Image (cartoon, rainbow, N blue to C red; front, side, top):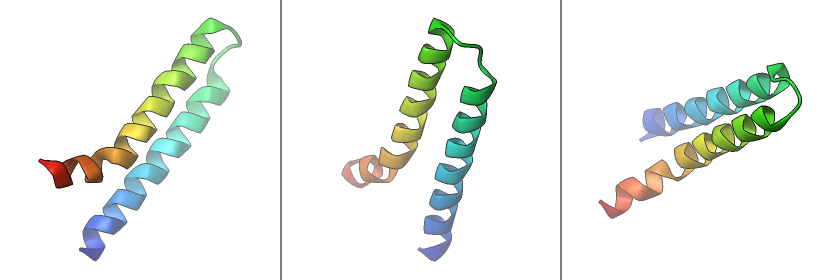
Amino acid sequence: MITAFTAYIKTITALTVFAAMAGLLMPNGKFRQYTRWVLGLMVLTAMIQPLLQLFT
């Protein structure tokens, strides 16, 4: 249980750091907006994943 929770936290942290770095490297404009939206969606999906596994 603890190892699964640790892996979950590491995954969320890695995705958040990746999203922040990718957001900083993108040029200004619409492409940056879409990239931030997609990366935010990925982080939210990773956060909700354990709840979805409870219902299946």
